[in-house]
Amino acid sequence: MRLSALIATIAAIIPLIALIYFVIVRAIPWLDAELFVNNPLDKPSGISNAIFGSLQLTTAAILAVSPIGVLAAIYLNEYASPRVASWSELVIDVMLGVPSIVVGMFAFMVVVPQLGVSAGSGVVAIGILMLPIVVRTTQEVLRLVPSSVREASLALGVPVWKTVIFVVCRTAFSGILTAVILAYSRGLGETAPLLLTVRGTFAQNWLDFGTTMNALPLTIYSYSGAADSRTLGQAWAAALLLMVLALALNIVVRARTVNSRVA
Amino acid sequence: MPSDESIKTSTGVTTSRRTEPVSAEKAADDAYPTSSKYALELNNVEAFYGTFRAVAGVSLKIAPKSVTAFIGPSGCGKSTLLRVLNRMHETLPGTSVKGQTLLDGVDLYGPKVDPVRARRLVGMVFQKPNPFPTMSIFENVISGLRLGGVRSKSELESVAETSLRKAAIWDEVKDKLHQPGTSLSGGQQQRLCIARTIAVKPEIVLMDEPCSALDPLATLKVEELVRELAVDYTIVIVTHNMQQASRVSDTTAFFSMDEQRAGYLVEMDATSKIFTNPKESLTEGYIAGRFG
Ligand SMILES: Nc1ncnc2c1ncn2[C@@H]1O[C@H](COP(=O)(O)OP(=O)(O)OP(=O)(O)O)[C@@H](O)[C@H]1O
Ligand SMILES: [Mg+2]
Image (cartoon, rainbow over the protein chains, first blue to last red):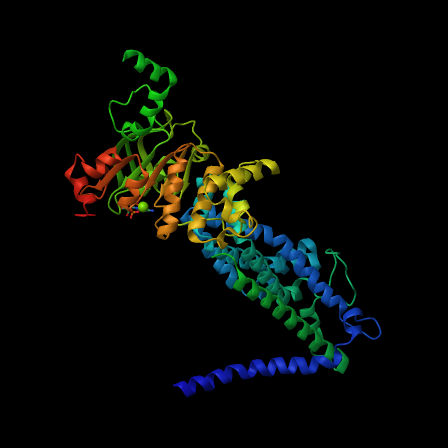
């Protein structure tokens, strides 16, 4: 039993290690300054527009979604009746499970006709995918705030709404920030919805959400079939960057969770 | 002799001598002049969790600036009744309260009374010390004021110092006011919570087994504090510790449970009377440790 479990573990780890190894080895030769500074049409070409496109898309989505998601979580946890809360939680759980291509298709059919193939449509699609993550994780964090904290505040003659904002949310602040970072890290890697809504471009787009933009997942998608080694190498480099960004954010989340002051 | 008597009265000595030791007996004593105000007066108060009646028909009167101890077996509704007194009971879903609770003669559950205001007038110290985990000692003490809209830094600072002094913890924390409240020991945390409660200047302070999480030394400190606070505040304290009840309280109320597990008041009297010569045999049995 023990031996077979060990073999299974190794079998599970091998593909992971292989993946990381391949990405790193293939990407490293192409990690030069031009990669980060230049755009695909520059000579020599780079993927700067994809890097900053990804950051812009994901940041815009998180800025739009966090206030909504956090407020929804506060409502569900602090105010909603148990029945409303459990139904809403069911809906959120379903949303969490919706494949991103389905969300992409929804955005393509419903949002793109309004906003066009554009960064804006992409932000909507990514936002839809992030929202349930923010709500769910924030709810979990709020649940960790002991009821004794709420009671202490109420017993001081603090109104409920002030208790919620200035005591409960303050106690959970670190955790709420963690929820937002987690959602950001997920949004960064989303590909399917971007393919259907943003499509990508060779140009650098700064904060113009009415037109198209580039993103790391889109670069990986369109470059990975390339015949010339430089383009292919840039696909690997984009993959490495995505991995490193996601890893870095996850490390931040972990560090925050360990140090969490919510007892 | 009559001249002697009149001198005493005119200098006020008699008056002051009468109020102090007698205050213990006042609350339950029918001879206590009805014209005087009670800090709290309960008439047939009942408290429910859903349909379960946890407190049944409690009527009692509490004199101002006295210490009243609630004692009785576990589950007899002491905490529930305490939470009725500052309208914390209703913060739990499905709960309800019946009967009349008068605070300084005003119905605490009257239609015009804002529960938030009621809780300002009737502060509460909980069984487990519960400082706000992300706030410093200073922020903890002034939290009630600051969240109540007080902005003046100098006012907040002076209230913090007075409250911490009154709660007998100033010397221990004055050099680390900006460290987290949770960095203190359990006993210090509890005194911090007491400081936080009195910082909003309530009229009544309710304490629900405030020493049950503390060691004997810390307990002693809190007990001393309770006695000192009784100069300015009306205090109601729930305790399972008979010695504690006899040490700190002027008046003791003994509660028990009926067959439906509803808590009721067995008797209330001067503490010395309850512990030496109670009217009810049930009380005597409980104090002697024969049940509960
Ligand atoms: N949140 C609640 N929901 C339902 N019933 C409750 C709740 N809290 C207390 N009760 C019930 O109300 C009754 C009185 O409880 P309460 O906590 O007031 O007792 P107590 O006298 O304070 O006991 P202890 O000495 O153990 O603290 C008990 O039967 C208890 O089971
Ligand atoms: Mg209790």
